[in-house]
Image 1 (cartoon, rainbow, N blue to C red):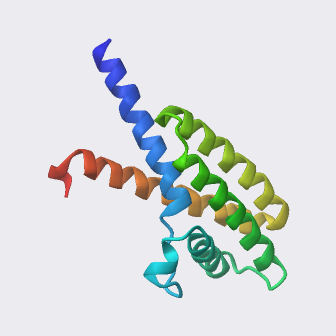
Image 2 (cartoon, one colour):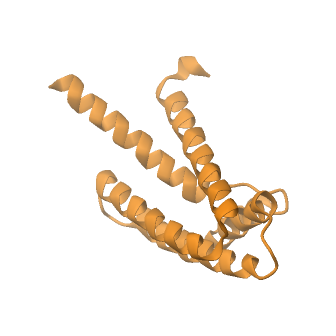
Length: 139
C-alpha cells in the first residue's frame, strides 16, 4: 500500500510538472528574460515559438496570441490559488483541454498535429526535469 501511494504521489508530481511546463516553460529568442517572467511575456514567447514551428499566418497569429494569453492568465490564477496540488493538476488539465479545442478551431489539420507534437515534447521535457530534480544522480 505504501509503494502504491508513493507511485501515485510521484505520478501526480510528474503530471503537475508537465502541466506547469506546458504553460510556463516556453522560451523564445525574441523575448528578454524579464518579459518571459510575466504572463504576457510567456504568452508572447509561446506564440512566437508557434509562429515559427507552425508557420502561423498573419491572420492566425493574433488569434493564437489571444488564446495563449487567455490560458496563461487562467493558469496563473490556478497556480496562485489555495487548492492542493491534485486539485490544481485537475484544473490545469481541464484548462489545457479547453485551450486545445480553441486552438483546433484556429489551426489547420497539419498545424494542429504539429501543435500536439510540440506540447508532447514540452511535457516530456518537464517530466525529465522533474525526474532530475527528484534524483540528483541523473544530472
